[in-house]
Image (cartoon, rainbow, N blue to C red; front, side, top):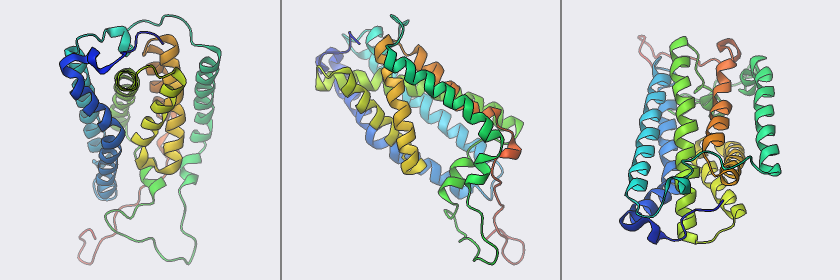
Length: 273
């Protein structure tokens, strides 16, 4: 992709702010995601509104960060819209990125059948007969269960999850592809596209560290595909559409195919333990 910032001088007075937000996306966002997820996990069994509360906090965080990055870009003196992907595609993606994008879409659609068949519910370890009950506590939920519990169940949750999916497509592509890669290019100066793809993949994977090692790898691969699409087309349009499609596929999964969330045990007297 041509037109990326050549140096931090292109940002003018916004240079320091751009670097600070870029560093936050790599180091701060994993911590924020961990804290947000742990708070959700702590309320999962006892609060019926835990899922909606998590969605709303996520929306505030992502739109707030995206708007901050937008303000910093607007304050930059020599970074135009094309340099951050706010332009129409200059052409189709290359063969490697194109095939990777099609493969991601095909696998996402194919996974819907497995998801609808209860693959997610079976992914949650079930206690064996006669085994000790799982530990109880604020953060005792198995990690895989807590992550899958983020998926919507009720009609109102599905409506809000739709907003979350679209938000992830728009805000995360703007932050991790348009804004972040422009900052990396300005700091490093002259990095090849392959290096930018790798940096973008690592940053995006770390942002999903709350999903565990497998989540980091999976989202890192997706981040690399999105970055390649962006750099080869010069636009965020295709990455936004593909990203949103990957997330919104969960709306095709009925609630009956998702793992149940057991209520918190009650202490003597009827109070929640």
